[in-house]
Length: 275
Ligand SMILES: O=C(O)CCC(=O)C(=O)O
Ligand SMILES: [Fe+2]
View (cartoon, rainbow, N blue to C red):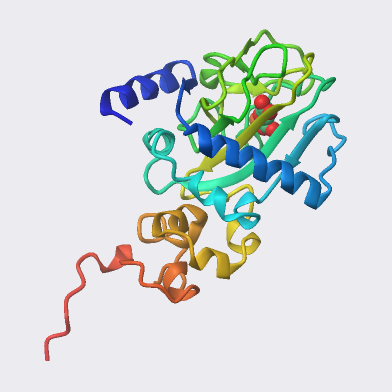
């Protein structure tokens, strides 16, 4: 992503709480993701969660990095990750990676903000930044994510189940919606025929807990094959050379047995002993 384009997106994220990157994802990658997700839905026998938040006619598959290697390209995508790093910082982490397919007849998800469970006094610096990859077109009729622009600056969270004025994040297949964790939003009602498929690629700051436990939820044999950057994003590095260390090593070194170039924050002025 070009620097100028990135700055414009970051300005919108700061002001409105969200932005849409059109033509962000390669069409053949989108096709492969759709095919893999349809296969996983069958293989895993995915059913709706039957609750008001995850939906009664919505199919969600969690922990996708443990499911197929294709998903390893998602968290590091060059048209999305720079925006996340711009909002959080380069020490950001994958919070969760799941698919959300909304099927005909689904009701609107209650408006919420993704960081409200953390309970920080609002407004606050972003500690969560999420994205929704449009694996199909997103339209008002098929349940495009609803947004309350500017609500990330408000000092309170929405009341669960209450109606709020919102706009649909309409976008063509291959686009990515990015929003900050405090923005009020929710999945839309589905009143059309074709499923609305999204990939929820969510990130958090490197100093808070990830929503999906990546270190225990992804087999280590799989993590060993991740790129170094993906290993860091999954939480196998440390934040600022400190948070997440194991005996002053990063998890990558201590658990995966890989060289991580990690330096403890305390060793910034380390000198060899004088004999
Ligand atoms: O499906 C969507 O459009 C949004 C889902 C969402 O916001 C959530 O599950 O937290
Ligand atoms: Fe959400």
